[in-house]
Picture 1 (tube, protein in one colour):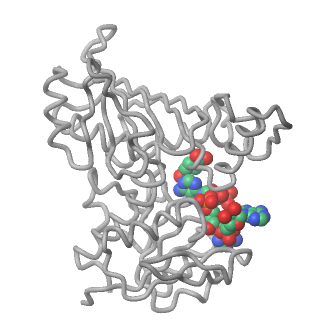
Picture 2: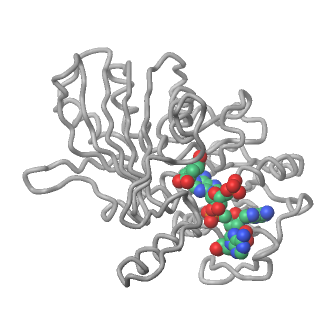
Picture 3: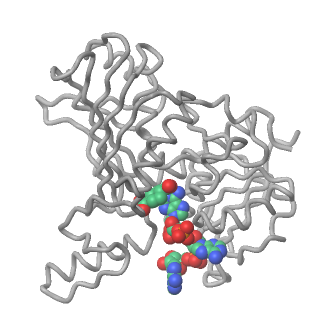
Length: 339
Ligand code: 25A
Ligand code: L14
């Protein structure tokens, strides 16, 4: 067994990929060699890593020789096309796209929730959807203590999840609106600056968006609970980074707000930030750049039995994507699961 590893980051120039590189560095992941892949457009550019620069290479199927862990975040199409080549070369792929999340032989892992599932991977481990990750991290301690029967979640999602082009679009549109200039709409079907879109990814025939469907199905898979009832409404808000969620849960057994606070205070990856009298509650501005999931506004819902409301905020590029992926790599390395 080696104690440092050859890593590849696919989509290294992207919004998520660049944070993956930053986190490998910040968390001192034991890196022997590292390679940065993106499309041909970016080949030859450099990306920063540990005080130096990595040259970006064009992603090809033959590029994975010697790679032990490949972190993919270049969209589902690239994952489907290139992850099999990485696995064939002997790498474990940690895939941030939705391409493999519902495959029965692909674990869908949040280290605070179902770390044991990494053991049954066959080469690919899927990183869940950002909105799902922050929700299950916050709910796991309650789920374990008293059971959860039903979840009703409404999200307020930042634009960074869509990638750099959406970050630029919010910036450019905001500037144009404030300067009374022409507002260009390219990334979303409507202007996002000073607007809210109840629409993330395509619509299914039942009226739900794909993001909503993913939240429902991924929660069931991560909790290994096909019977848990979940409904979701996902909205895009004009925020650069960090997602907010209003979550209503119905538990199997009664639980007090104080008990929930105690559970969350002891929970890994969770910061309780809940002092309304002092105007303290989680917000994107405080969560950005942090790895934890922030929880506040915990209160009883008198309108139904055993019901509670929570407000949950997290940095979607970090815990919602890159941090979770690097934590999975750490689990693999720590468990001696890398060759
Ligand atoms: O599946 P899709 O439809 O392809 O969707 C993928 C989108 O979802 C985001 C990701 O944005 C991408 O835009 N995404 C992926 N996984 C996500 C997740 N889990 C996710 N969002 C949230 N959660 P991104 O900016 O984070 O990352 C894009 C990265 O993917 C690389 N990439 C794209 N095509 C590739 C590829 N890598 C290999 N082979 C390919 N064929 C991409 O690298 C980036 O690293 P890049 O070199 O294509 O882009 C680097 C710079 O070029 C600019 N740019 C982007 N598109 C164009 C462009 N310039 C000119 N023309 C374009 N069409 C960008 O500004 C970027 O900075
Ligand atoms: O990982 O915000 O499934 O547009 C795809 C949509 C991530 C967020 C995923 C967005 C999501 C993304």
